[in-house]
Length: 303
Figure 1 (cartoon, rainbow, N blue to C red):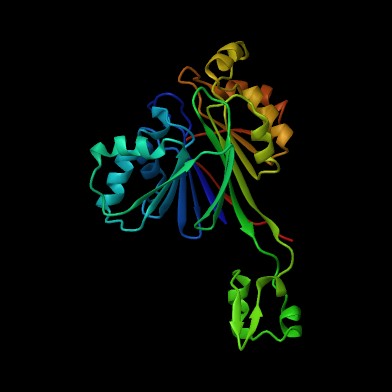
Figure 2: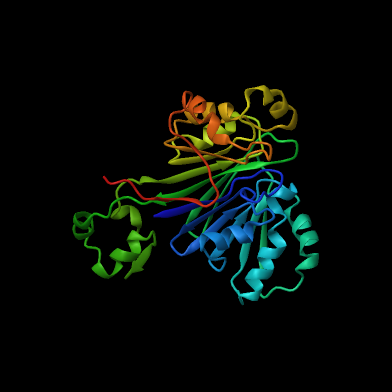
């Protein structure tokens, strides 16, 4: 099961009733964040979740509303006596940006590992997450992320018995390990069927519509996408500043055949996003207006 929480839904600046856009997921004891602008710590506290299990923070890009909360989060982790390494992932320049922000958080009791994205598409596997980063189209280098929880094939007791594999190895083979005993090698493919459908969440913000978004969001269980502007007359502004409208996001969701889309990263000028919901749902019926703290539990499909 993957817990997904949209911590904040605001773009540009935090508002009294809208924190800056940030996402947090929890899976198998490990938490992952995407972006952490000013106020993200409060959003996490309001949700009642913890920073301690956060092992990975991904950054879409280095505008302040997506990264300025990092020093405070690092200090909070340090004050909680965290010792486990923390992995940061983001576009090229990550180490330089993090080093600058750490001028106010210089001494930490844990290691920070930076992974800089340099290719249009990159995949990393950490703490049970398959993280697919893909380049999008903003006015500085920006990435979207697909977070995937893979699911191995079903374990076959019949195959294990037929191949005379000792039962003491079954559990480890099921977890993907390869075992050897008395010169004989046992591999997971000997007892596992084809991979089953996993869980897939795609998150992108601060971009114009791109083919890469449709490609990576394809068949996602949940697609979280920026909807900076809801007013149709602001399309020209969206193009100028390389953002999206509600309607463009809905078209992407439809083309990618996702199960559900949550809109996020609203302009501070957008006071009543609900006024535009019905019009957007004409394009993609399963559109949901993201709200701070909105959470869902995604589970593997029953077979």
